[in-house]
Amino acid sequence: MFRLAHLSDPHLGPMPKARLSELASKRVLGYLNWHMHRGRGMMQAASLDAIIADIHQVAPDHVTVTGDLINIGLPGEFARSRAWLSRVGSPDAVSVIPGNHDAYVRSTLPAALAAWGDYAKGDTKPETSRAQFPYLRRRGDIALIGVSSAIATGPFMATGLVDDDQLKRLADLLHDTGRDGLCRILLLHHMPIDGLTKWKSRLLQADRFRVVISKSGAELILHGHTHRASTHWIGGPQRPVPVIGTQAASLQSSPDKRGAGWNLFEISGGPDNWRIAHIERGFAPGATGIQELSRTELNAP
Ligand SMILES: [Fe+2]
Ligand SMILES: [Fe+2]
Image (tube, rainbow, N blue to C red):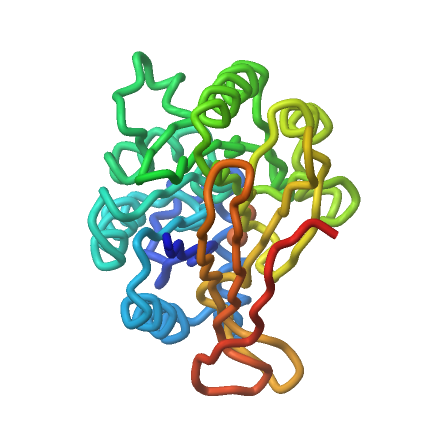
């Protein structure tokens, strides 16, 4: 059995102090937004520390992080995100993809990817930085395929896009790893389903992404961005493909809302017969400790 952890959207704090010149453009809105939300206790370092401690105690074979480690791309945020990743695990055991906040303004994504290094690279080196995504990391019979939907957007927008170049390479990767009988697990920041996220936060051209999945198939798609746990299905060539989101990993619980959480997947079986159990762990509404919240066999509906 292979045990895979999935966490997302740590939005690492605290926000570094910013010079006025660094807050030009979109950043000033993000800076104010951060201080408003932290003031209301929505994102908490203590919750995130508890999530990481829980993952370490469960000791999965591999950890995936589906984006938004950074907030607004201030200089102090890159080295800190790398330091946090090294606390989660080694580059070999942790796979990261970027989210929209990791591409907050145009200069953010290259700096984030440089800081993350091997955490966001496949087993073989890409020929160019443009070809870094989708990456493939093979761990036994598991194929981890990291896709980037991270693009810099205008103020008030948090959309994502998987461009045609990536989609073409993704189709090839899914085809090859499917032919080899691997359990294909795709990592993507934005939710690839229309109408379930705010318009400003949607995945652009999500239909093109779904066409690739409907033709090539995948065993599991993991995403973040919504900050909420969710399970949906999209069409595949033989059977529907589960699309699983997770609570943001630094979310504070309240009496009526769940707090931070993460997903554990227990993967067994083999080609054409992969069995995946989905276990949600996290803070129940009002809870001060982490517990198992649900256990579901991901059988197509
Ligand atoms: Fe986020
Ligand atoms: Fe996001």
